[in-house]
Length: 129
Image 1 (tube, rainbow, N blue to C red):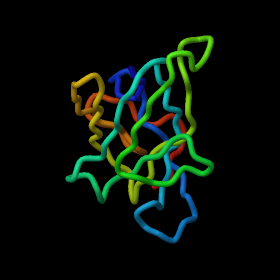
Image 2: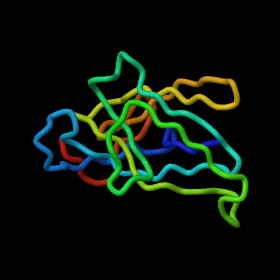
Image 3: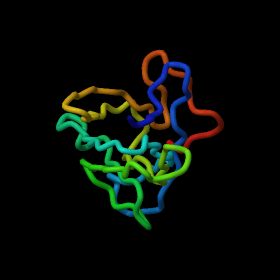
Image 4: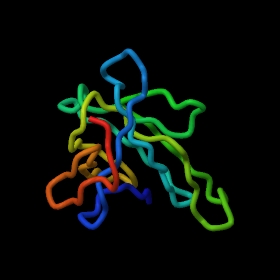
């Protein structure tokens, strides 16, 4: 199990300028990735969104990618959950699709980066455009 900000009750993520000259990673939306211990999953940016978003967690710094695979050990923490720092890079605010694969199943989710997805609340506070 992995927790992502996809609920219609959640706000879209705030974006901030990275200062990177590469326009593909002009904005960053920082958010933790919370994973249930004993879980293995994959997050994938679908082909139609390859120019809209890249993802990364757990590095120092994280490297923007279109795919990450995470395997959280069964005894990762006393709480039963493990958290990783990271987030989403984007050239502009957007509602972006992401594919989550786990346990032989695949689910498509939408993530609001600097702007809300349908039914989602706008980011709290200012967001760089």
